[in-house]
Length: 459
Image 1 (cartoon, rainbow, N blue to C red):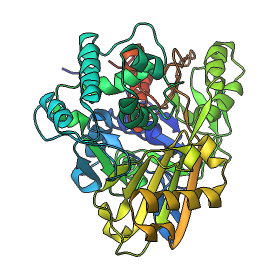
Image 2: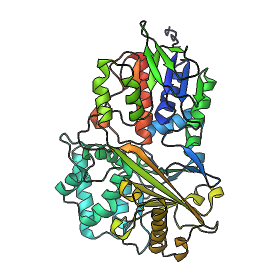
Image 3: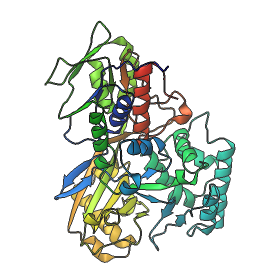
Image 4: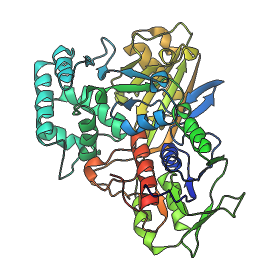
């Protein structure tokens, strides 16, 4: 007979995607869990906000079919991904006449879909296509692994990738995946993402998934319902100010409301900055190395500019890639037609700028104006220069700079019963490390729940 589950009380601090994943896994295992979230809205750095009487996201996201853990938890929470997410084949499509390319994969088995897409791609010369084929073949031969990390730019130069291919394919993919410019980004982590998408044996792994619903609705809100249905609780507006390790190995949390709550284990699923602050308060030497790693992270910003036009405005595609040339005040890298995702947002465009520090320095008004002018020019639609209103949202600490050989803490803090979860954590196997993405956060949350309940790292 199977041994009965010994129920223990766990606390999860932070209801971003990592915290939601951890809480769901703990609840699924039969443990009472209480989630503490300082904000009123769940989702952390991938959540809904309200601007101009419109429900937006704090940043326009795009997921991949390779995000298996995210999709699994969405289903576990009782959600239908097909209703919440628009699934598109792998593509990198620029507006006609903008100096880009048109690359779209058909729904053929992998890797035939990539071969066919490359053969039919426009905007690439024969030399560009051969360069991409050589790179893909070499990476498959290497198992998409680098034992000695370097920058993405160095990797591309080493394998003779053409300037056009770097500009139109690798540069935007690196920015979108790692939120770090290729000249500073980790090639090893970049290859991990490419392996699980472009290099996967399943074609669906390379699909591009664009949320139709707001980000909080896709998982965090449903995760809260799941936790509560399984005997747990989710407290919003509850900021944990301090942790206290008790002599018996349990933990007391101070959230300014009920300081008497005692838990058998705690998962800190806040940002790395907030986590480091909480851990410092424990004054435990075993945490010094973990804290030092978190404090060494360099933040990278992501900006999303929303532009509202008349409801009749519609793009030919759900999204386009854009050539970003800051020298010409062209900052936008991707533009999404929100009206094709949600009919209630007809005429609303969202333009994304990854690694947006230099762009954000322009100021909200000038940057929004520059983006509107860019859209008008590259889409050859002069009316787009005059939106009805704009809203620029910049997450200054959206991610960390994912640089080569970056030292990242794991889920285990070094103190029994105290775990970390977040997109900044590292996997025990470095070939599984992901950049700061939703999938990385979810994987980390699942792994932390496994460690805190079993004492063993998740496989």
